[in-house]
Amino acid sequence: METEEKKYKSSLSVKKGVSQVNKLDKKAISKFKLSKKFENSVEYYLNGIQKGNISILSQAITLLESSKKEHKDKAQEIINLCLPYSGKSLRVGITGVPGVGKSTFIEALGMMLVNKGKKVAVLAIDPSSKKSGGSILGDKTRMEDLSASKNAFIRPSPAGSTLGGVTRKTAETIILCETAGFDVIFVETVGVGQSELAVSSMTDFFLLLMLAGAGDELQGIKRGIMEMADAIVINKADGDNINKSRLAMAEYKNALHLFPASKSGWIPIVKTASAYTKNGIEEVWDTVLEYEKLVTKTGYLFQKRNEQAKYRMYETINDELKNRFYNDIQNKKRISQLEKDVLSGKISPYFAAKELLN
Ligand code: GDP
Image (cartoon, rainbow, N blue to C red):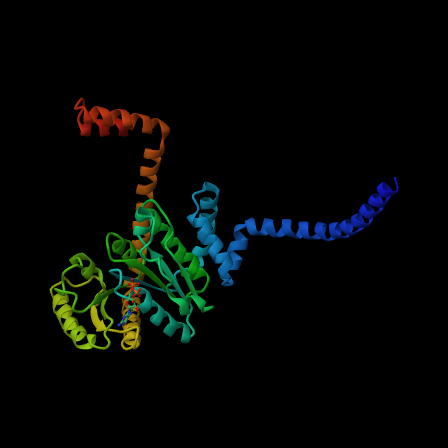
C-alpha cells in the first residue's frame, strides 16, 4: 500500500510537471493551429514569396509539382495571385549536350551576376529523368558556389510523365520565382530532344553551348536547334582549346549566315567562353543585355511572351483533353477492346479511333 501511495505521489509530482507543460502546450497548439491555417491560405504563400522567402517559394513549387488535385488547385490559385508581380526577370534558356559544360558555365555566369547584386534562379528541365529513372542533370554535385549563395535558387526538373507537363510546371515556377524577386532566371536543359523547343517556349533568350573540335563541327546538333539560338557559345575555350575554339567560332558564324533572319530582328552572335578562366563570360552576358535592350525597344519581347502564354494555354488544353480521354474508366475498357479488334483486323484503326472519339 505504501508503495502504491509512493507511486501515486510520485505520479502526482510528475503530473504537476505535465500540467505545466500542458499550459504551454495549449498556447503552442493554438499558435500551431493559427499558423497551420495561415500556412494553408494562398495569401500566406503570396506574402512569403513576395518577401523572397525561399522555403515558402519551395513549398509553393512542391504544391505545383504534386499529383494531388487539391495541391494542384491551390498552386494554380497562388500562381494567379503572383501573376501581376511576375514578368520582371530576364529569362535565359541554356542548352547543350551532356558534358558541354552547362552547369559549370551557369555557375560562373550566375556567380558573376550574384556578385553584381542580382538574384539568380536556375531551373532545370531534364527529359531523361522519367525514362531512365536517373537524371542526366541531377547525378552530380552541381553549382556548389551558386547553391551556397543566398541570392541564388536552384531547382531541379520536376518529375513528370510528359514533357508538356514538365514544361508547364517550369513555366509556372518562373512566375513564382519572379514574384520572389529573382532578376535572372536560367532554364537549363540537355540538348538531346524536344526539350529545347520547350525551353525556348518559355525564355526570352536562347543560348546554345557547343564544343570545338568534336569532329565535324556542325554534326550532332540539329539545324532546328541552331536556328532557335540567339547566341552560340563555343565553350571550354581555354588551354590547348583556344585556337580550335576560334576556328569553330568562324565556322558557326558562317553557318548562321545561311539561316533565315529571326523575327526579333536580332542577329545571332557566336562567342567563345571558358568557365575555368572566366574569359568571355562577361561578354556573353553583355550580349544578352544587348538583346534585351533591342527586343524591349521594338516590343518583340512583349509580343514573344504573349505568344508563349497563348501557346501554353493551348498546350495545357491538349494535355488535359488527352488525360481526360485516356484516364476515363469507360474509355480505358473500350480502348483495349477496340485495340484487339484493330489487331485482329476486324476493324480499321481509323474506324476504331472515330468510334472512341464519338
Ligand atoms: P554539363 O553536363 O553540360 O552540365 O557539363 P559540366 O558543367 O558538368 O562539365 C562537364 C566537364 O567539363 C566537367 O569535367 C567540367 O569540369 C568540364 N568543364 C566545364 N567547363 C569547362 C571549361 O570552361 N573549361 C574546361 N577545360 N573544362 C570545363
